[in-house]
Length: 60
Image 1 (cartoon, rainbow, N blue to C red):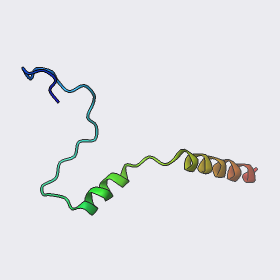
Image 2: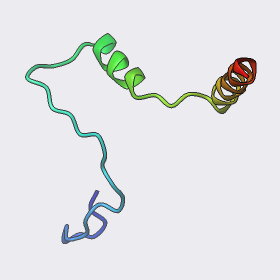
Image 3: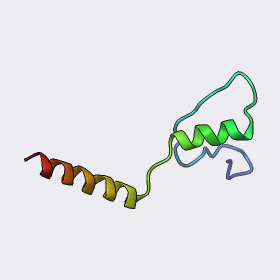
């Protein structure tokens, strides 16, 4: 938001993934849209990586 009384200070930061819709979204639509872009937990990534390595090891 604006910092000074004159309103000449811009927002500090970035905006990413801007999406527009033709109508209002329900709570479940917003949650669904948000979950589609979620980042997995590090433990999930670690488990997936270890499973991939195990599969590669079995192929040899």
